[in-house]
Image (cartoon, rainbow, N blue to C red):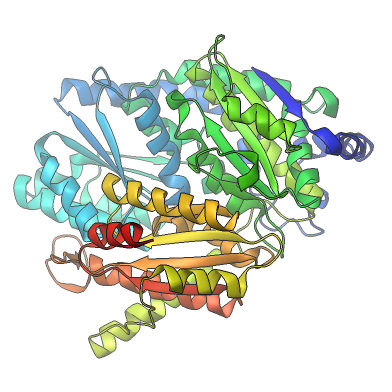
Length: 548
């Protein structure tokens, strides 16, 4: 791995930061699990550092994962569907997209959307006789994950019978989780109990990442070898100048303190999904206490005139002959900080997981926050729960105030609320299809080019478990554009396994989550505008773009 830093006018400040890391013995204190590096109290720090040596400890479990993969092959399974959210789903999605292919033991896909169309798509393509469902939740109480589980378990039971359904399910959770009892009741073929001292967004190299990785065809030993090498490079004894994790974290933290807090990623196609994993790690870890580092993912690079002085650009390249985009050089010449990371092959992503985890911990030190908790994530959950309870009591959800979806409405909203350091966040509670993604990406680029503001875009409710923390916990400069749609054909969420009784549907749950997040954002003093795109959001988006 090679990392090239082009920091321009910020070089002296970055160097001062490295000296501070050395004086405060930061790498050593991270390894010592010294909570005072971040906060006076150890709560949600000392019990969240299990990721530090997991590349070494998890190797003993590789044969167990390989045995599962072999059993799947022998029993004729062809597909795996991971049911999870946030830290339980992002690494598996990455492994599927980057490593998956025709030779993989199973075709792995991820369901992390409560949109009925997304749920229906997976049911339509899967044959329960040949499908393994992976129920992944650290707490065992994640409402979306449990809703997915109950729905697909009941479907599998209807097709295969109660005696056979359970062996098509696998659990990944923490000791003491409620999923353990549910899994035993349903007859799960196995439950992997993860190290409880690893937070979800730091769990890529634990069972949450490696079990799906093995099923997708990843050589786990090779991946862990890369991670172990990076772990050794990030040892307690390494000087910060020669410590990859400390040096990257120092750079990100110091730049953020000087207003360069929009970390904008570009990659080669082979690793295009890797920044989606970094997005949660950075946003949920650093976005709190009125501070934050905003990851900007999938926003195409543009000429320097489309950017303000709040960006730092990170490019990830693969292979010895790889070169960075020419636009990156022009951005560097214009004074923007640029970080270029080159890895030899995709298995070096094992080291990249570890590098970014350590860097995030060090950036948190510079910003004076705890990078291991998520104090604002619960606010949206609480508000959504209130909406669901209101629905169960009254039989209807409030529609909530929406505005006409016109360019004038969007422009008026942005011009009224924008300030120095603002960013635009598109929150799309619509079907997560590729067609919708393309239209939304066109929308975000037009916003970026028109207002010269950083843009982010994510489907809901998925983002509630990642960037949702940053949205409510940072300095409050986000401008939020919420897009919702109605489902023509809804799907009931079972109350429990083995029963068709239902008190809410997936569509209404998604609507409750959108309303709950809107209320949580407004409670936090954020600027929000909502638009309803009806029952054909793709057509409505395209009409909007054509008229702009």
